[in-house]
Image (cartoon, rainbow over all chains, first blue to last red; front, side, top):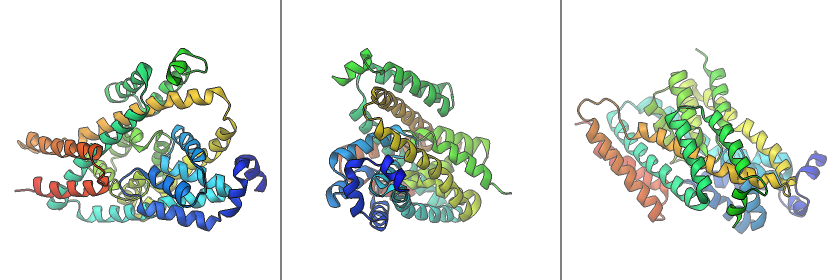
Length: 201
Length: 186
């Protein structure tokens, strides 16, 4: 196991790795998992990992975050796994990801039970329609916030439009849309290509 | 009627599509859980996702509610493991490799390329979601009225999230109260 950790985790944080116990990691992520209401868990992660505990510096945090965005899986759980792995190896990754999921997962299981019992009541149904309309607004708000931060240039717009067209209009499976557009976009942004240079500016 | 093997297969597959967030996988989740397996209705899936926005932690913990609804507590556990374990292992493996590939030029190309694709898939998911959440189906004669109220709530939410710093989970809770009043049966 020490072999895997040594080859997998970045060497510069080896000193930090010794300070963080698996239990500390689990508790820290459990608290994030129980208190990060309303999305934006990244802000909670940053305040815990960088500001409060100083387990990661800002640069490592941003590096892990950019990796977590390019991989399948949710940003929050990917960050838990990457940060846990850096600090304590695979067992740290497991502790962190279980910690961050557990509170919400228990609550949502209970929500599933309550939903099964009460969703046919008219008042509950009416409230759920309001909640669903609100969630729609939240999803679009999140989209606009992310788009404002990451969209640069015509190629980005083209790939965004192509994804919507393939999934919503042509009813292509998300899997095929993801693979086809992911490969096409990677080629467009190939190293040394014109799109990559214009984006870097 | 044991649905657990199918639940595992569906949610393990869906988890691999959550590039850039859970919404990207929403259209596929709708196809598989509603139209292929008939576990729940379009509206019920929207309800679970929406309730999930009020829970702490990753917003896709709503999959636990779907698992519970379909197959009880064991269903919830199976779905959680299926949804988080495969991508978790992938992230662990690729994360280590990725760190060592810091100077590989294609790494930036993949990251730049995937960003707009992930965002487009998220928008596609949002549109699929909105088609259900803002349209309550065939409630004879009242369809249009319901649509307008839901759209107004959604627009107000959008503006409040973008313009204020009020916690979105609280705002969604407020939308529930507004909904309980606005959509109550006469």
